[in-house]
Amino acid sequence: MKKLLTKKKIDFLEYLEKIRGYSDLTIKSYDESLREALCFIEITQGIEEVKSTITFNLMPYRIHIAGLNAKTISKKLSAIRSFMSYLNDNNIRVILKADESVKVAKTLPKPISHKHIQEAINFADTENKLLITLLYTLGLRISELASLEVANIKESWVRVLGKGNKHRDIPLLIGTKELIDEYLSNNIVKIFLFEKNGEKLSENSLRYKVNKVFRSVSLKVTPHQLRHSYATALLNGGAPIVDVSELLGHSSMATTQIYTKLGSALKQQNYNKAHPLCGVDE
Image (cartoon, rainbow, N blue to C red):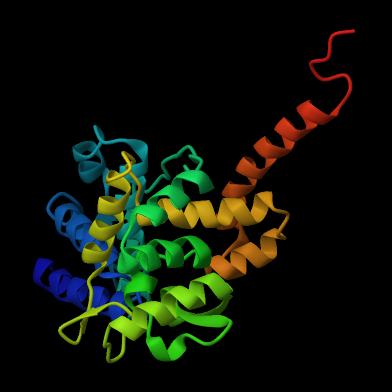
């Protein structure tokens, strides 16, 4: 049974890569979680209505990971559920036991102020200036930036390949287009905007460049925080959440709604400043 599941796990990871379009980092995380889980899960096989049924008792594994924080536990269990769903879809009947969900508190993103982003951009060289500007003005995931092809950059729009191999078009600011043109005039690329020796730069390479630029201005910033900053700036500027959700490439608007809490905080501040009865001594 373990040999069968190991083989199916490899098929599952390949499915995530080629069909669902998951990033290398996500696939690696799934692989590690499943490899660990299969060492602890109790697996029994029985017969149910003539069909072979496999029961996975998650309790031993849940005991093993009980000391981790709720968010990490939730991610590990989510990987198992996805794998089980894949098995069921491929004619392997699986039943999960001890599969109760873990409540995870939704944490607000930590956007970077426009002032600090501009400071980093002013300090950076042409390549890194373009790198940060694209993340901040297009709201890209780092995997999407790594896969951005020059052919998909038009005069006022950029076509982005996102999760699940879904394309979306994002408006391109004039200033950003000028930076792209300047960069391309000094760099020869074949397919991807960011290349080295004819190969696209890895996500880790791009992530390192972003971190390095912000460290130079004494800040610790990740590419995903720039994506948060993009979304927060749009919502605080009055952009409809449905449009922001589409621009971010979210499959569900519920994912985007976490940013509205930040927008609400700004509305509260503005209200406190504007209303005559807020904080005014008579």
